[in-house]
Image 1 (cartoon, one colour):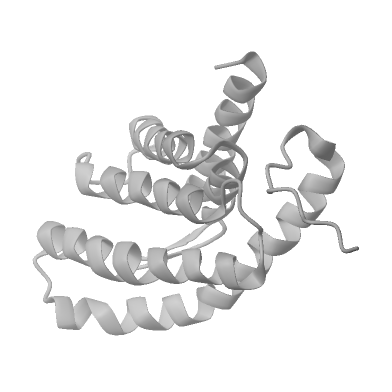
Image 2 (cartoon, rainbow, N blue to C red):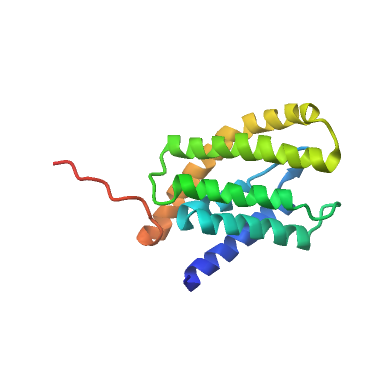
Length: 176
């Protein structure tokens, strides 16, 4: 692993912590913000393993530096890890098409946020899953297009400014 990769991962961890702890709207059931962005970009640039590690470390360090009332709960760290893994699996060294980004966000939304995170909240709060889901579904429906468009736009501008150093898309066949 090179110094540039370590620096970027550290930067993504710091950005994720700031976005989560200071620039998100937090309720007991949902969090609205742009915390997905550094993890998605990490997945695009470095792949599933490093994106998962980035997300899990950001969650762990964030809760240790800025506890949010309750004790550390490893379920949310597992969710963060899976989120990074999924972004990396869908977007690393693959075209960053609207449909591919949409599929990655949809899988994360359904299986991680609505599935696992709701399970973790049920375990922590004891509230019924049916009681937790309506607000979480509404939040997910609102955030889904925002996440897709934001990831696409930010990557477009970021890849243009970084040049070919992190453009890990497969070469395109030239038309003859």
